[in-house]
Image (cartoon, rainbow, N blue to C red; front, side, top):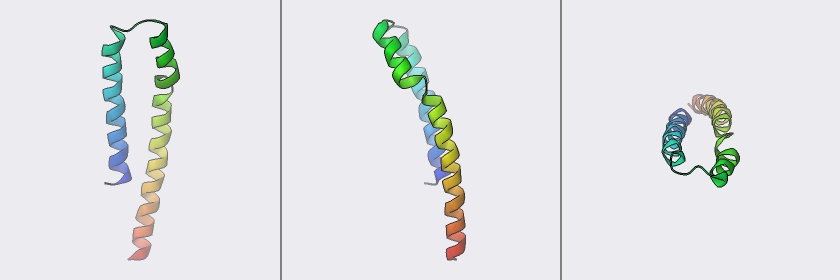
Length: 70
């Protein structure tokens, strides 16, 4: 699996998490749920975005290495 494919899987997982969180949030809406969202979910899209950028860089480097080894 390439870094690009892994990144796409990561984005898909975030989408699924957001959907599931929306479902859970409909039933779980107390202080702890707000704390959970703030501590674990709020910054997650930014982390995924940065990770995607790094994974793209890794993919480029891996292509260069493969090309150099041929």
